[in-house]
Image (cartoon, rainbow, N blue to C red; front, side):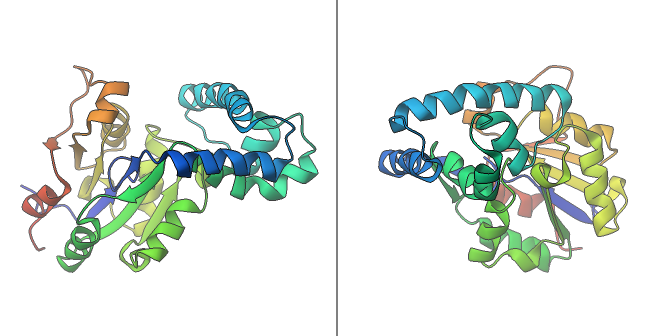
Length: 242
């Protein structure tokens, strides 16, 4: 049934990588946020202020299906009361620290092996991810030796639109030169990672069952993926050599 699939696009957060709570790591990130900006506040108080502002930004992003660039995020939304000329050059580093403040991101077991095997089997691979950072995912791929296995990496922070807007999926298919009907998307969100995929005309949607995601965003009866998997290794059962 999957012989027509030529391209496999993967999500990153809670799909290829998960967040591990590391209190010392998180506390250090909060401390560095204060040091980098020169904020005259205790780290926890500064973090609480940023968190309230971040909630406003995320609400806007989800409602409008758009993503701010790192510079816009920090100069307009997170630290509008700081000099833009100071904050703008720091925006990339600030985003990474903000991400680190909620935990350490590590790949799931066997991610590298699965990616390499799917590539060997003849599938074109790509990434489509909603993310506020413009460098974290490319840096991780480079560090783990995976960059060359992905023909394209689509990040909402760089494209300016986010899932489930079907345009982000159509852009990804266009960049690799494969018609949407021959593409599949693998994600963890039972609503966002299915709705846009179907609207874009992708051939298949696959959801990796992730308890942390389901707790925040439970499934909706009117939106159903084509397949549910419990482990990423199941992709090797679904997609034989082409």
